[in-house]
Each structure stands twice: as C-alpha cells, then as structure tokens.
Image (cartoon, rainbow, N blue to C red; front, top):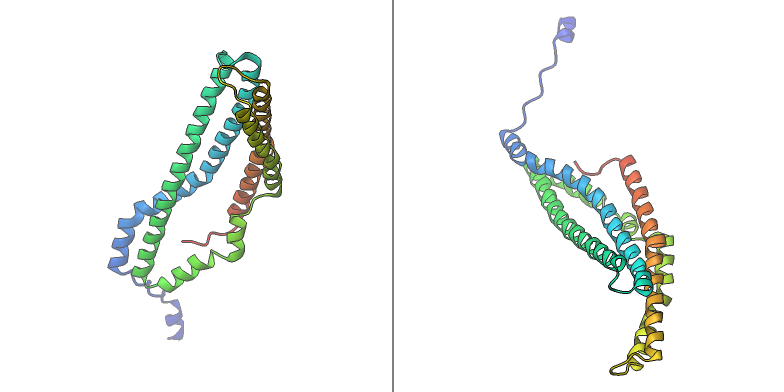
Length: 226
C-alpha cells in the first residue's frame, strides 16, 4: 500500500483565480510596452550626448569659420545649420525622455494593480522601495570626476565671455566699431571656443563612458522588478 501511494503522481497545482488571469491578459500590452521603454530609455541618453557633442563641435568650428571667412561663407552657414539641427535633436530627446518617465510611472501603477489582485502589495512595496537605496540614488545623480573637472575648467572661460561682453558693451560707439569693442568680441569668441572644445573633448566623452559602465553593471545585476 505504501508503494502504491509513492507511485501515484502528485495532484496538479490549482489554477490561478479567474480575476488574476483576466487582469494579466488585459495588462499584457502595457507590460510588453515596458520592455520597449526600457530599451529606448537606455539608447536615448547616448543620442542626447551625440547631439550635445555635435552642437559643441559645430559651435567651436563656427567661431573659427566666422573669423576666417565671415558670416556669409558657406562653411559658416553649414555649421550654423548643423548647430540648429543638433539642438533640435537634443530638445526632442529631452521631450521623449520626459514622456518615457510618464509611461514608466504608468507601468509601475500597472504592476501595483497586478500585485493588488494577487494580494502581494506588501511584497511589491518592499521590492520597489528596496530597489531605491540612498547609495544607489546618490550614484544615479553623481557625475564622473573627469566631467566635473571639465565643468570646473569651463568656469574661467564663462567669466571670460562675461568680461568680453562687458568690454564690448562699454566700448560700443554708434556708427562704428571701436578697438575696445573688437577686443571684447575677440575675448568672447575665445571663451565660447574654449567652452565648446572642453565640452566635446572632455565632458561628453566622460559622461558617455560613465553611462556605458552603468549599463554594463545593470546588465550583470539581477532585476529588482517583476
């Protein structure tokens, strides 16, 4: 008798409640959209950094083109168009990231609804709040040291631009361009060129490398959300 009991298969697990099945089926498109949003949110920062790099590089080259060939030259007009295009892409990336943030919030609400139907709201809160630790939040808003040094190097050139503008304004003469105004405009161009050169050669590459390292770490770490 004991042998017969051991041979008998175990009974199948009970089926999930009908309301859980209905909610899962109704909210499946939103969960699939969440995976798409995760991929898009990982790619958009790189697109934004690329737009910033092109904006900075074109702005620095535009200063040289204006001084060398004038504002009516084809090189200056091309660089100006490139600058406007890159800035437009950057603005679009910001708007898309804002929309993704709203959609991500909606996905969290959907996950909370599923947890409420399952009766595991406490588990959802523990996992959601546990994923946001003080250390991880500080790391999310921290900048790499190279980028910080780049921003610090930009400060003197920003002051140089302000000083050049003040000199040009105080030396302005109606109907002509004084020597002081010309010197002030040259100082402004030097400051703008230096800031954009530091941005595209130091700050943007450092931020891109930092984002890449964070992505690699996130791929290796297990996900905290269902």
